Length: 181
Image 1: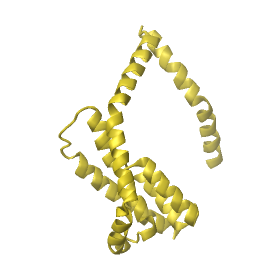
Image 2: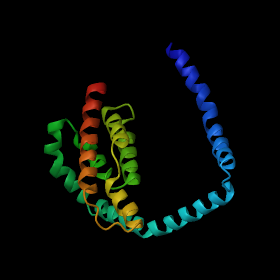
Image 3: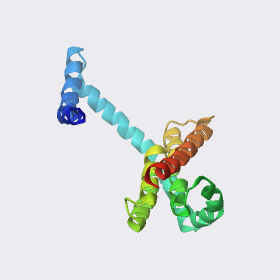
Image 4: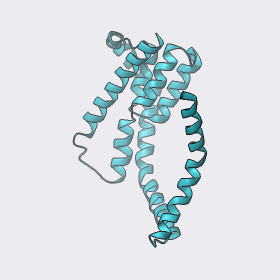
C-alpha cells in the first residue's frame, strides 16, 4: 500500500510543475486576460518592491554582522545556557535559536557550522535542522517587509512572532530529544 502511494506521488510530482506552468496561462487566455502584459506588469512591480526593500535589508544585515562580530552572541549564549538547559537545549545549538529570528542566512551559517562540527545525524544536527524548519525570521520580516510597505505600527506582530518562534524552538528541542535521543 505504502509503495503504491509513493509510486502515485512520484508520478504526480513529475507532471505537477509543467501542469501549473501550462494551466495558468491557459486559464488567463480563457478569461481573456492579456497574460504576457500582466506578467511583465507584475515583474515590474516586483522589481520596484525589491528596490524599496534594499535599505532595510542592508541595515538588518549590518546589525546582525555587528552583533556577531562584537562577541555579543557568545556573551548571550553564556548568559542563557543555564536557562535553556532546563528544557534540554544544549548550549551548542543556542546560537541557532538566537540567530533564527534575526536572519535566515545567518541561521543557515550557524546551522552549517553546527552540522559540520557535530555531524548531520547527531542530536545537535537534527535539532538545528528542526529549528530551521519550525521557526521564522521574525525580525527580518518585520524590518524588511513591513519597512518596504511603510508599516509603522507593527502592533502585535512582534510579540506573536516571537511567541511562535519560542514555541517552535521548544518543540524542536522536545521532538529532537524524543525522536533521536
